[in-house]
Image (tube, rainbow, N blue to C red; front, top):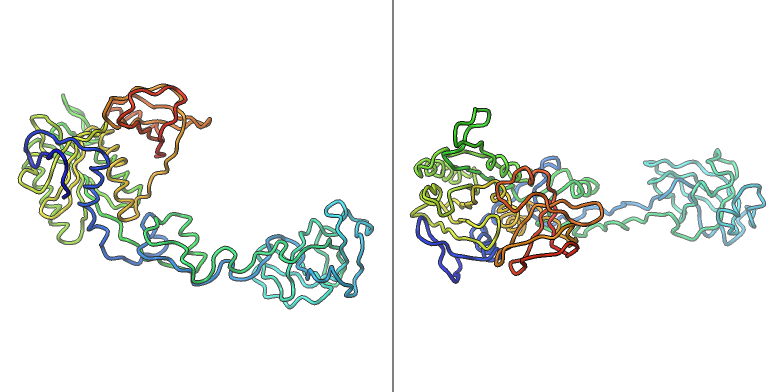
Length: 441
């Protein structure tokens, strides 16, 4: 672990250190760096979604793999418009069609060749011929341009051997050249790229059936607290249902990680130690990479997480962030442990602002959140010296409106938000219309 100005509390010890969000991310990155060295695995396309590429993806073929038509129309030789090869040249508006209105260029009449559908291998196009061709079909040898069918006279596909009048076009018109999208041998996706639907579509178009990926992280989320009641039970006095485990494990799975949740329904540190010991055994057997705990990291008299980790290589500190100030990180018998606070919004903000960006940088999954600048819909106040993270909603007019207050218990507001507003430590108030940093969630 790197040094810092004020020593954090280790295990159960003493006063909290104070550190910035950036400093805490750096310490998380140091703790979790070995996770980036896990061996790659080959996954079928359907199972690669949400993972990150373990190696550069190199195109084995070009896209398109051949010259093809961009339009339904007629494949032609552009040179035919510059010389008399047996057809009629001139102002084809005189043929009775509306060719002059759609281009007015000097054109000519062509003999219609056999039609070409997508997947056909056409015969070479002879001088003076125009071949009806469908979008995506292979351009015949000799052709170098396509005239859209709506510019033809008549504006339909006549039978082979009939005559069609077409306006003059230049070589390359409405032709998709081989390799114009992707050239064979090019790196199309670098290692570390998160794999989404668009990346899988590209891989499929290149003929891949499987991809080398960084194996998704396997995470156990442990909620702690004697007040936690099982879902479905009637709440007793002072009890609440566990939201944190479901909130965090769902967030992790939503972002391509493998996650399970467990609950330690006790303030006795021995209960949590048993959960952690079992998790450490799973890690030794290669079944688990990381534990996230929620609760028991603040300054109260019954902080079970701090007590359970006493004597292990774990440190606790208070961050200049609201919500989500109390944090812990370290290892339990070699297993990385990240300790979040217990309020639902605090633990979710801790994931989004602290851990998620670190994992995105280290292993490529989850993806980084999209960030933008938007004007505030209403004024806000923020505590001096803390990064305040507010739940918000991006409006259709491009402004961002806060949802709910700053409290760390407001799960209802979190559920209807779709963005975060980050207010810097040195800002205490902002007027409506002021630009703020927004993360889309």
